[in-house]
Length: 216
Image (cartoon, rainbow, N blue to C red; front, side, top):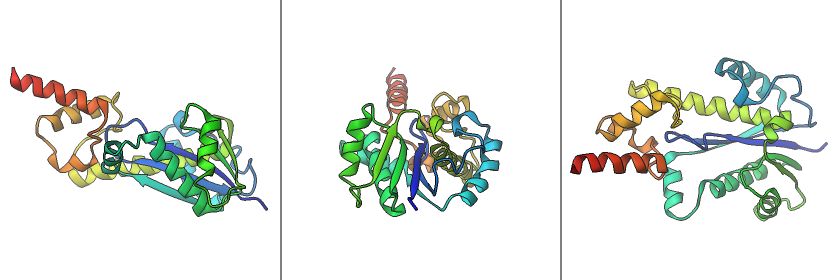
């Protein structure tokens, strides 16, 4: 029986915390139909309810967590987030020994993404279906999306608990995150430094603005 894999991520856009890439394995493409997807249209409570059900239905799953520190380091080396995510997806496919992989494609040109991805796979006969918004089209990709999202949310929550701070979601549109980042740039919360994506344009521009104010 073919090993069918769905792959998606959570945390591409935040200025704080990990990028999480997840792959789930099932025997059939419709194994997760009826559970209610995708992660972006569900409340946090609903995602948490679905999390154990997805793990129970899946034959296997694999995660790759990419820290803010690694993202900054790879950016400095010229490896952007698209490439980094692409490499983590290849690792997951290899680990799970997938025969078919349905992927929410991070690249603007899916055919180019598929050709490059195959070069990193152990099994060159793996069938790749890479599409934009695949998490809406295929429940198996939606399942991976939920596992990734719940994992990342738990990580941010643990940060808040460990350091007794209010971070919010980590996304730059979140007022709690904006407040936290402003406090950080004003010299507070130094202990969270390694979890900040310093290479992000949002952080760079805020740093430049803060520096300009100090000069004036």
